[in-house]
Image (cartoon, rainbow, N blue to C red; front, top):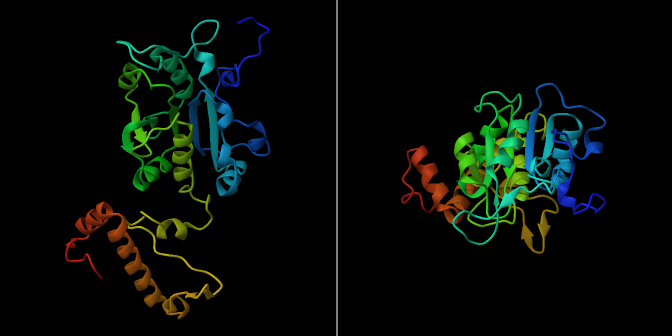
Length: 278
């Protein structure tokens, strides 16, 4: 490739320094001191913030309640063309992200992050532990997180072992890359940061907060297509409303997520078979 040949978009920025992108999202206000920070190593830094720049997470980003630092992997690549991958050892289809390239990116991404307990290092991988609400809470309680977005056939196992990288999955399926998974993980964590949602009670009542799925919600009009809002919700009797919501949450959990229901019953000393029907 000649020097005047346009580079593909995947080359992104040529600076090997972590920076927030896009610039205009945080131009108005710098992150507050000690703000939770997500550093994302990716071949597509322009994919961020994406949907994270909208709604409540975007507003919180603008206000400096959290910070986003996409780090372009390409500048850490080998040779003139900044190659970041190579063929699998032992043969096979696809390409594998090189350990030496990722190690150089991690040297920048992990600079000044402190103990791993306060700043986890995570690789988004289909073989990782499945992301859940408890994990999102753990990440939100940290000072920040560094995320590695995989591509191709994955990441050289040696760099995972050397750095003790935690692997996290969205579920039992495969994506073309880790950017979508990283966005989901960041969203799940950021919304638990104080002041981001503005109403802490909403996170306490939603699905998984107590090991149950969330109860159904209703709003105006009181009757729609012949379907009425449950009478108890219009009664103004807060204790009865709370009981109804709890019963509905338990019913939905038993029906849709028997795995969660068994764990919930074990935690509360209940028999899942006896309580199968309310």
